[in-house]
Structures are given as C-alpha cells and as structure tokens.
Image (cartoon, rainbow, N blue to C red):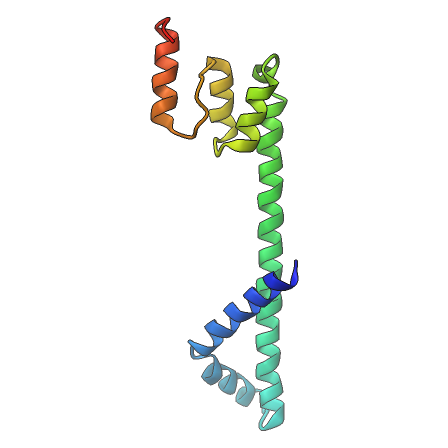
Length: 134
C-alpha cells in the first residue's frame, strides 16, 4: 500500500470518527474500564488506530481478492480452447474489455466481430455473421 492510499484511508476513518458518536462511545467504553483523563484519551486514540488498521487490512484483502479474480478471468479467456487460432482476439477480450470470462469465451466461440463492450452491437454483429452477411 502506498502513502497516498494510507492517507486516504486514514482521512476516511477520521471523517467517520468525526461524523459519528465515536467520542461518546469511546468515553462510555473508557468509563466502563475505569479509565479517566489521559488514560481515557489514550484508549480512544487506540480505538481510532485499531479502526485504521482494520480498514487498511480490509482494503488490502479486497484488493488482493480482486487481483486474483482478474487473473483467473484472464487465464480462463487466454487458455480456453476457443482462443486457439485467435490469440489477438483473446488478448483483446482478456485485457481490453470488461467482459466476463463466459461472455468472452462465447464471443470467441461465435466468432463475433465486436468486443466493444456494447452487448447490442455484439448481438447485432453475431446475427449478421450467422445470417451470412458482413
């Protein structure tokens, strides 16, 4: 995670803390633990730090999951038998479109000429090809 991402996460946590009942909740929690004065302030600061760490961890986990899913999508398209003989089209679908793996494989199988992301255009192109026109 780079510095800008950490700063953005910390700023968001600060916004949430400022716009919520966090201070009152932290005060009640500190009081329930018998804390007062500087100890209560340190306890509240610890809660904010814990929230930051949790949000950072969630962000990293979500990012890693998204990257893994995208790698799986790309591999499913590139290595599918329907991609054999048309690697350029498979690469275009894998790297330059927002098609799901199933959608991209269907385009590869059908020989559809459009991978623009416009499903209406894709359907029209496929129907023209199937009818024997171009």
